[in-house]
Amino acid sequence: MKQYYANGTRLEMEQINKEEAIVLIPLGALEQHGNQAPLGTDYFIANTMAQRIFDQFEDTFPLLVFPTIPIGLSTEHKHFCGSITYKPMTYYAMLYDICASLAHHGFQKVVLLVCHGGNAPTAQMISREIRSDFGMNVFVLQSGAFDDPRVQATISKGNTFDFHGGEMETSMVMAIDENLVHLETCEKGHIKNQAFETHLSWLGEDFVTEDGKPIGIGGDPSGATKEKGEIIFQVSVEHLIDALRQIRQFH
Ligand SMILES: [Zn+2]
Image 1 (cartoon, rainbow, N blue to C red):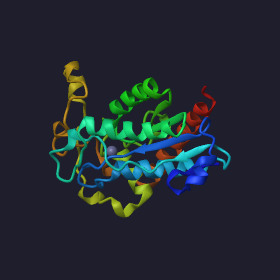
Image 2 (cartoon, helix red, strand yellow; image 1 turned 90 degrees about the vertical axis):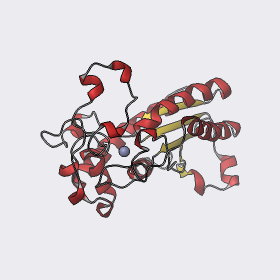
Image 3 (cartoon, rainbow, N blue to C red; image 1 turned 45 degrees about the vertical axis):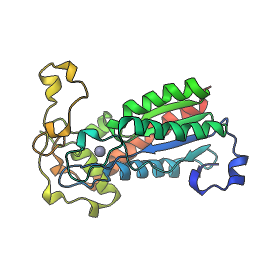
Image 4 (cartoon, rainbow, N blue to C red; image 1 turned 180 degrees about the vertical axis):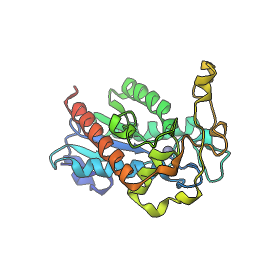
């Protein structure tokens, strides 16, 4: 009974077994991703990841794919032209209200699919609060399997600290639509994490991407290809399907 949430009618929703259904909410962002990749990079990745998960599941899997949330928490990018961000408490309230509505209808399991690191802390807070307030389980999954050795193998030699707007994310957008990427304009970004290098652990996540001089990205996108993006999607979907099967068994 897999289905896209927005495609269902009220009558169909009434029929759904809310105890077993898993509502997957992809969390995107709208923020700068270097010279070469679009503002909607995380939105496109979130959307495509959810579609691919949906396509690969058997019809009987109780998955409801919720519309992708196009904007997230991107305060660290706000000085770069085009970036749009919620304030933390706006983002929290928006996600809380969606989850509270789902709980009100009797759903028991929601998965927040985090496709932008800045959204993760809020997703964790929502997970705790919603369970505490409604008894509904909110699971948090990271969308890209960036630590998997098969994904790591796609990174070009000498490209260190590849993350935001780097080779991996750019490759993923190319796998979606090569026309969205303008690789000829790309520049190298931050090649190391200064917070770790200087042992200033109090800096924590509190850096802005301008720190990643000159252009607020991590790594070097120049080696990005559509084929690499395909590998990253395939491996990530494999991890996520496995996690969703475990969530189905969770009681
Ligand atoms: Zn991104």
